[in-house]
Image (cartoon, rainbow, N blue to C red; front, side, top):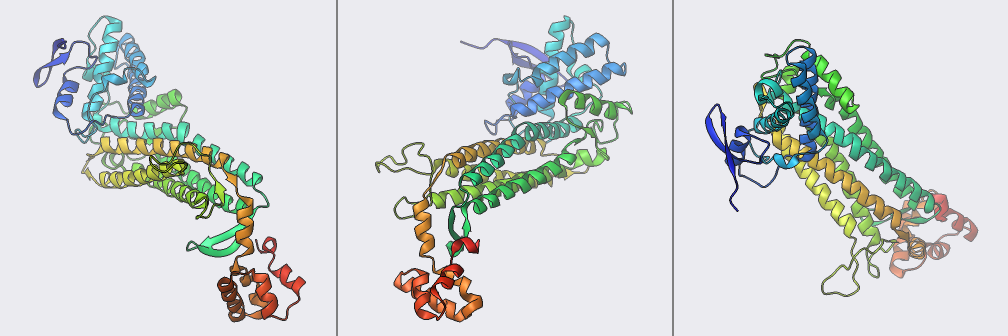
Length: 454
């Protein structure tokens, strides 16, 4: 069935728009012009635009720039976007004009249509919905708002749960010793709980770094309008807007100290992306450690057994793979790639405006989403794995590196001879040390006791 169309008009002329669309001419032009990918702006970004437009409407009403009924209608229409409604009305490709003007106008047009329907009168998308604003301050603000909300509401809670899962697992495996490894080679022993505590510390540091970056995320560009001077916006608009947005979101937003910087650079987004990359690196390390520890079950380390989740091969019956750690490692790789994109995009500020804003928004929010899901996946993996205690004990008993504990008694060179012979003869280090030293067996056993070495 052919779509029915209506004719809309903008400053460039007439445009045919689907009759059931809430958007208008400028959105349709963008939809027609930008066909580079199938990627659309994330729903969270659109919701943040709703919060921004609602806050602006409130302030414009307070300042007398909009009639109270018009301001109220725009506010309520914008809040439907903030609630996640009408996302299907945002068809513009991520790869669009670098300022994100098309997406800003998309929001203005949808809100104008909804407000017009409510009031039974025409509400102009530029003059009313975009009052005291520019795409050049709206889109940078939306980047900060959407990232701040996503990190606060999704990523940090998931990261906290993962740390709690690790802490609980440390208690579960308390007292279980294992062979340490450096360069993937046998090293001095440690406890499994100590190993897990290293992972937990990585995550705690990552959370602290991200939280510190949020201080800068909460400084927003709104009020700078076109180039940072605030043209066409009242002097007190920026401060009042930040107050209103903070009330709506529960987040401590404030006007940026320098609006010229806030429009022309995306240094804070680059910083936050870097901290997200650091978390991705930590998650990849943990995922790969889990894969190694689970390897086998006969020819690998087989220190732990991950919960079997699905058949691992289309041809080898009975094969089980560490699928969740593999998925996390891939997600981490994507986040690292996203950071490279954001870094390049962050350097694409020319004079008074960065011109890669949509791709920064897309990649930043995707990174938060991927890391949130990865934390959940690792939480499940860690909570469910079982320890192969006998394998750990056998490997530890055969570990010639325990000869390190003899250094202070017999010297490095003699201890190395003992270790080499134990390796060659595949014998316990204690037995070889008894033969090659004049130390008492009980004293040797005390020196070589792994529990005393951790």
